[in-house]
Image 1 (cartoon, rainbow, N blue to C red):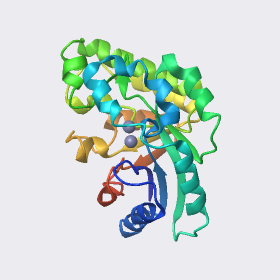
Image 2 (cartoon, rainbow, N blue to C red):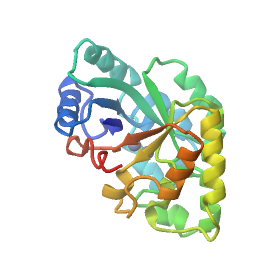
Image 3 (cartoon, rainbow, N blue to C red):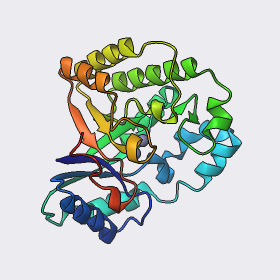
Image 4 (tube, rainbow, N blue to C red):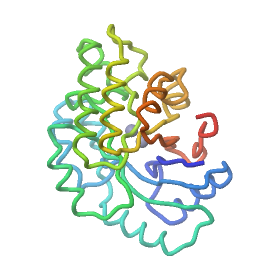
Length: 253
Ligand SMILES: [Zn+2]
Ligand SMILES: [Zn+2]
């Protein structure tokens, strides 16, 4: 089993911490582990968040970030690659995609050599949809249909950019329990067609269930069927932010 998305976020960038993730993966029958962290941990990515920080509550949240240099992470990767772990381990990033920052993201990423890069839509017009303050700046002030339409438009642009190896949790917008008034199947079709064309890995991410209490364990079932119909490459992910969560629900997915 593969866990293609686990975060070092809540610990130090040290070999011992990476080893804890690898040991947890082995204990959970994972034989391939993809370790990463959010782009907003690293100060080199600060320029892509300038517009996010125009919202006060969100600025406070981001002000706790950018605490490391990407070079600390690259040094750690170099150190880890000298060790032969009993399972396959690769190292990358999860980057917050915003269409308007696409060139900037591309330029920054061009400087670094990583095993993989995941692109994820975490924000609508720079406003994160899954944080404690998201009601205040997004859900209470914007129409749900508009939020969904913008979310999916960003995902299609993400795929077309060809910057990323994988798209993170592509129906995560559902986690707050708001439903659009329109049918999502045409979007699923358009998404699947494009994902196949651009050969991007599509994540089936269990985080929506055990982190956000959504009834789905991963992607919407119809969405999965449509992705399969188009021959898209699905990949399992736990989105673990803690060692104990590595491999969560991968067997079920
Ligand atoms: Zn994410
Ligand atoms: Zn993540």
